[in-house]
Structures are given as C-alpha cells and as structure tokens.
Length: 210
Image (cartoon, rainbow, N blue to C red; front, side, top):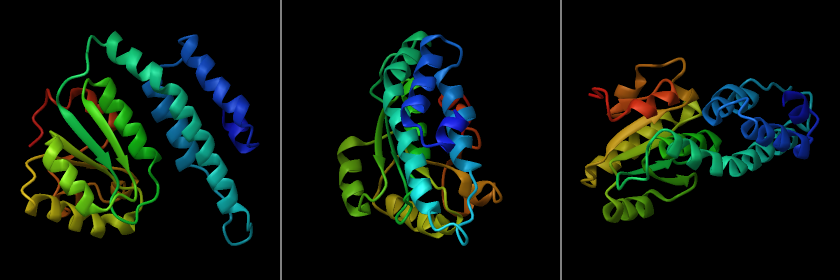
C-alpha cells in the first residue's frame, strides 16, 4: 500500500485495501489505524527543496479519502458483527477552526459508528455558530474534536469554552496528533475526555471517563 501511495497509484492503493477487507486478511479498524493513519503521519517531504510537496501531499490525502469512502460498508458490517446496532446516542465529530486536516476526524467518526453511536461527521470549516445551533437540536452525547496541528490547541480551547458557554450538555472528547507531546493538555483546553488511542472509543461507554 505504501508503494502504491508513493507512486500515486490510486487504483492499486484502493483495491489493495478493499481486497484485504474482502479476504478478511485485515480488520477495518486495523486498516485505519495501522495502515492509513501512519501512511499520512509518517510521510516526509522536503518542503523547502521540493516545490511539489504540497501537490504530493494533497494527492496522497485524496487517495486515502477514497479508501475511507470505500470502507463504509465494512464499517457497518463490523458494527453488526460486534452485536451492535445504530443507537439514538449521537456523536458529532469535527475539527477546531483553522484545522484543515480532517481525515483523522473522519476515521474517528467511523470508529464511533462501529461502536454503535449515531456518528455525524461534521469535519472542518464549519462555522462554530452554525455548529452550536445544530447541537441544540441534536443534543449529542459527545462532541468529539480532532486536533492535528499543535498550533490549533488555542483555538480548541476557545471552541470548547464557547460550546460550554452555550449550555451544551455534551461531553467533549479530544484527541489527535496535537496532543502527542502534550498528553495532559486536554485538561487545559477544557475537554472532559482524552482519547490517546482511537480504539478506546469501543469501550467509551463502559469505562469511567471522568
């Protein structure tokens, strides 16, 4: 898969993933967290010397997005295999303002689906005022915020403050690469729950999350 991604071979990359899921040689969550996420996170490019780095990064992300879209039927099947059905407990998954890396949030949303939640992927670039209006109608059990860029932690703190000031009773869940070197910063941004490993979502309702 890494070779296909490096060579920008979209067809090969997508088929490898779909065939792996069809043959059951890999589980969909393992595909997400052990193959797709590292393929984006660990990719390196000389942004100073290679002026095509952004071009390459965007193509790489586009291929992974296509894989994610193709995976959704397997997400639903995995939920059924786990003995879960879609519940009325809603989760809204989004990114903080000015955070444009939303693939991680999409993966998180799908894992919430596997766990049985009614997961709504809001993604990036949604005006906060619009989200707050929607949250009043949806009353989500959790608001999950994915933060990739360390510099967006301040925006995340402001966002969570606005959510709580609006009287939203949802529990705020945070995670993402931005917390990798600052694992305790979730408390500083005002979150209720920090997920170091997305697999923790599967047991989120069963553990003490305070």
